[in-house]
Image (cartoon, rainbow, N blue to C red; front, side, top):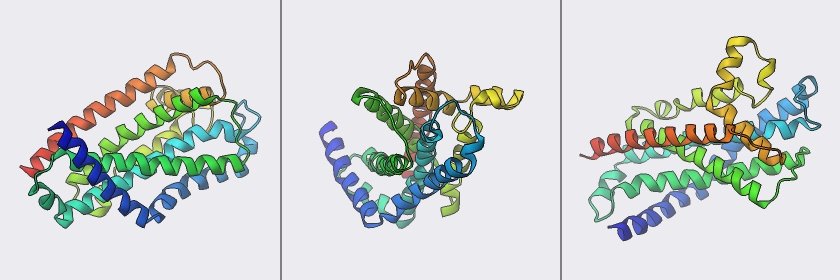
Length: 253
């Protein structure tokens, strides 16, 4: 059974990835908005923001990477919704394949597509003056955090992808997630915020994740905040996975 699951998932992931590579505008579109934010904040607002670093782009990039991923998962919900509406799921389920492999193919495609978008954003940041003294291990840790964050959000995206009644409904869930980095330490230090806003910003997951990535890229002590960020990601991942699988089994019952 396990052998069938991995084999079926690999085949279906290849199918989903072919769809992505045939429409590279999806990845480009995913990266355009975060890059636009980065250009706007660095070259328009950056001179007025005191973030405690020589290069504001160094401070800004971790939050932009999370926005990139939050933007990309909307396409996961869209692709899943399209497959649901086209009847392809019914055809897959009539074949002798592991049923959960259909969902995992979309999840792995999301990881790959968002990984490409993140690389594009980092390359643009390098052109804008981003520099990091982090070693290979630190970059791998950053990649691991971003991968876990992508997995958590992707399983959230699966739920509206399965249940939405329209294309707009399938992707609308991502708007609140996109808004979270703006009320965090992604753009400015939380110490500059008024009391209630600061309290929210300092106790929501994006701030912990952004601070951990920023510290890793700057070769500074990460502190205990990284465990809070990872705990948020794992907690969201587990809950979203359970709800997504329950929803999926109800849909195909």
